[in-house]
Amino acid sequence: MELETFSIVLYVFCTLFAACLGSFSNVVIYRVPNHKSIVFPPSACPKCGARIKPYDNIPVLSWLILRGRCRHCKAPISPQYPIVEAVSGLFGFLLCRQIFASNLGLLLMEGGFLRLFLFFVAMSIFVVSCLALAIIDIQKTEIPPEIALPVAALGVVASLILPDGAPFGAVRGNLEFLDSFLGAGIGAGLVLLIIGLYYLLTRRIGMGGGDVWMLAMIGAFLGWQSLIFVFLASSLQGILAAVIAIFLGRRQQTDSQAGLFRNDVAQELNDAPLPETTGKLAVPYGPFLALAAVEYVFLGHLLPPLWTGEWILVWSAMP
Image (cartoon, rainbow, N blue to C red; front, side):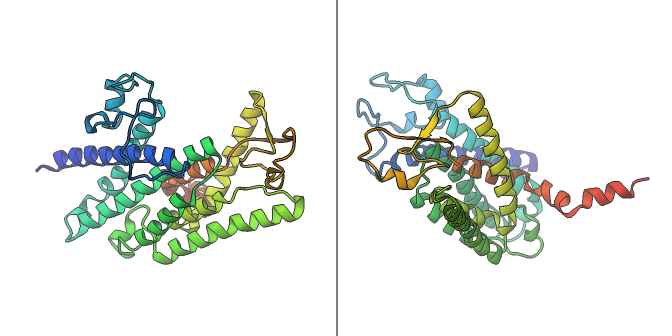
């Protein structure tokens, strides 16, 4: 098979593989927050209960063919399903370019393709999990540890897939085991520290406990080196979203709601006749952590020259 043909096949396969992960993540998004099994029963229409056939479960394509409606009862199917599948497929395409297309020479080495493929699978699970957790946090204002913690453990294991030294050391995203292990611990620890300090100062809990699990997952896959960018980028993007929400006149959050800014103590006062407005915006932080993590995966290679000042040194040396 010619190299060009092989590359096309590889891109198509990786895109479809990630899109299928996205299709499965739609099941996870719905079932895990509702404490339902992700294995049984098989997927069915929530309105008429008709089982979804395999040919009606093809990512994106089936939704388009069915025009966004159940084949049996014609109930509408949320556009969230094809959007998640399409975005996941895009992640797979970009990861293929990053892992395979940039390291074609490694495919010829003994065991090279298998190592890169396993690394691709692990990274695909990570970015699709970021997307799924972001959607769950938006819908339910929670980050289930049943998702984040197993993926975090996978991140530590994934650091052992590719050797640390040359030539595999040049693969973008390849981490040493210690960097992954420290990333998980430091990521979770920093959130716990912020929660503790904020509570001591204000007697309020300013971040949800789910952010602990999510930062552990991000640190495990991206290493402790990524955490500065993830914290800064997520915070800035969160502030921007809050400003936009204020401009659009989004309603204030009540004490009975969960979110990024919430009063967990007041949530226990269920006998209150009316919920009291906290004056805080109901903006969950998880989606911005997920966004920053995905940005780091695909754009992180552009950051080290800026952080180390290499661009400034090169500019100053120009005549």
